[in-house]
Amino acid sequence: MPQDIDYPRLVYLGLLAAVLLGSVLMTRRGAFKKAAFQSGIWLVIFAAMIAAVGIWQDIRSPQRSASSFTTQEGNVVISQGGDGHYRVKIKVNDQTLSFLVDTGASHVVLTQSDAKALGFKLENLQFWNTAMTANGPVSTAPVRLRQMALGPYVDRNVSASVNSGEMQQSLLGMSYLNLYSSIEISQKKMVLKR
Image 1 (cartoon, helix red, strand yellow):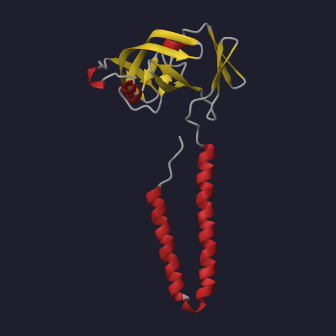
Image 2 (spheres, rainbow, N blue to C red):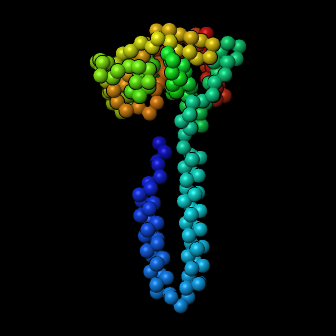
Image 3 (cartoon, rainbow, N blue to C red):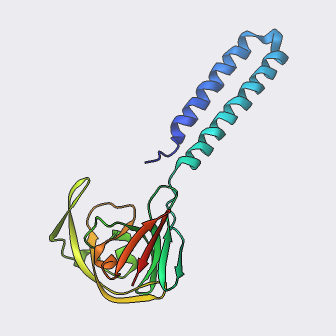
């Protein structure tokens, strides 16, 4: 999982560098021009290193946006994301939600924020089901999705769950994927056929 830049630490290191630079300048008053020039060079090197680290993290970070999908001969073709996962945007009821395709999930699993966007009131849901995840068991609440539209396919009354824990993205599990006759993965593409 990519780490965010630690701005407080970056500010601390910048202040530390400024203090060190100031002490060097104070001890070398006679050679102020030379010290200022050298300090400028080190400042440029420091800024370039920060920029390089930021660019490297951007390059290495997984793309969280939905993978693109197309329809070919009536099939839905989802392209693989830069992180190796398949993500797709689906119109659920009247909202467009981004899903991570997860064949290991039994149901469509909604994040709490996506559930709220669909009009579910979390305080009214019954979190009595338990799902086993990589992080251990979590409570889930069963819900029904009035409509899910992906490409030319519109499905109604799809079973789903709302996760009681923190999730980064809703999961497109087997309660939806079983609506297709086959799922094929080849050459960084997932093909859903009916």
